[in-house]
Length: 238
Length: 238
Image (cartoon, rainbow over all chains, first blue to last red; front, side, top):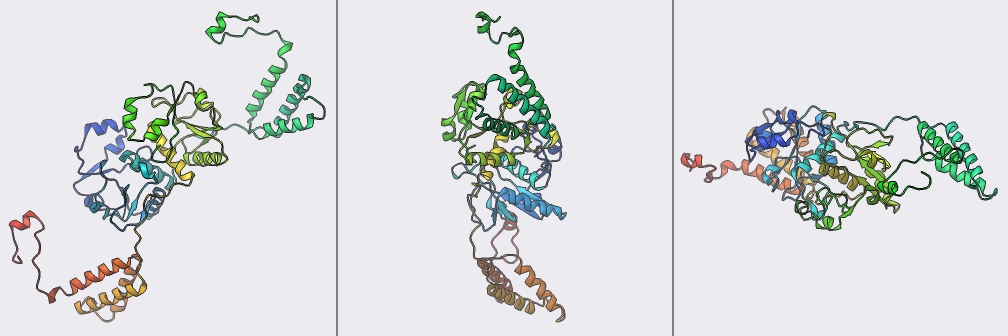
C-alpha cells in the first residue's frame, strides 16, 4: 500500500487482534498506514461510507456479479473517486478468501489474470497488483528517476567520428580493396548512426579509436597485472 | 512467476546454494519452475544467450541507461521475443540490488512507479509486477472466469414488472395525488430500467412485489426465530 501511495486500511475482526506487534514490525516503517488503521466488527460497517465496493476473488462464485480485471477495476474506482464519492476494495482471508455473504455486498468482482494451474496469490500480492493498477489509473505513476540527461550527439560530431575512424582504418588496411570501401563505410556509418550515442559517447569513442590507432607510435606502458596468474607468469612485455 | 506463466528462472551464485530445501518448500508446488532452474557463476554467463536484457533498480545509477516503467519494459520484451530473439529481466539481491557492473550489461533500466518515501519493494514483489505486466503485454491476460451469463431482461419483461409494481402501489396509496403519479412513475421506471436486471432478477422482483402486495390477504406465517435473543422473548406472533 505504501509503495503505491495508499493509506486507508480497514480491518474486519482481525484474527490476531489489533494493534499487533508482529504486523507493525513487518510493515517496514509504513507508519502512516499503520497508525490510520481502523478496525470494524462487520464488513457492512467497514464499507458503510463507500458507494463503490469491488470484491477480490480467485474463484468463480455462485453469484451473478460482473467480473472484471485489475486494470478495469482501478479505472472505475478512479472515475468514481473523481466525482467525490468513496470506493474500496475488499480482500478476503489469506486461507479462503471472502465469504459469498461478503462478496454479495460488492458492486463488482475483480480477479487477476493468472494461470489456471497457479491461480492463488497470497493477499499481499493481490493488494500489490491492485495498488499498482490504482496508481496507474490515478495518473500518478511517474517514475522516481529518469533517463540520464545526456545531449545526443549532433550529426557533425558523428561525422567527425566517422572520418576519424575511416582514416584510421584506411591506414590499418581494414578495407581490403578500394571497391569494397564504399559499402563498408556505409555499413559502419549506419551502425554508428543508429546506436543513439550521446555527445559524451562520441568523445569516448574518438578517444578509443585514437588510442588504438596510435598504439604503435608510443612505447607500450607497463600493463597492470590483471590476475594472480599473470603475476606469476610475467610476459616479455613487462 | 508461476501465477503469471513464467518458468525460466536463472540464479547467479545463490547465497544459500542450490538446490535449497527452504526455497523449494516456499515455492507452493510450482514444480515446473523449480525443476528448470539453472545456476550460473557469473551474470555474463546467465544472460549469454539473450539479446535484450532489462535491469531492475529502485535507485538512480551513475549510468547513462534509458529508464523505463514496467509496462514499457514488458511491451519491448514482447516485441523482441516475437522476432524469435531472447529477452530477460535482471533482479538484484534482496538487500542491495544489482551492482553497477551488472546493470552495465543491460540494454535498459526498468524501475517501478513507487512513492518516493517508500520506494523499496522486496524482490518477490518486483518479480510479481514485472510478471504481471509481461502477461498483459503478451496478450494472455484473459480472466479465469467471466461474469455469470444471465439473459438480460427484455423490455417486455421490465414493463410487466413496472405495471405490476404501479398497480400494487396504486392500491397501497403510494401516489399521494393523481397529479404526482406520472412523475413518480417516470422515476420508478428510470430507476429500474438503468439497473441492468436480468430475466431472473425481474422474476425475483415480481415475486417480491407480489409477496408484499398480498401480505394482508394471507394469515401471517410463523416467523422463524432469527436469534437466540428472540427465542428467549417470543413475540405474540408466535
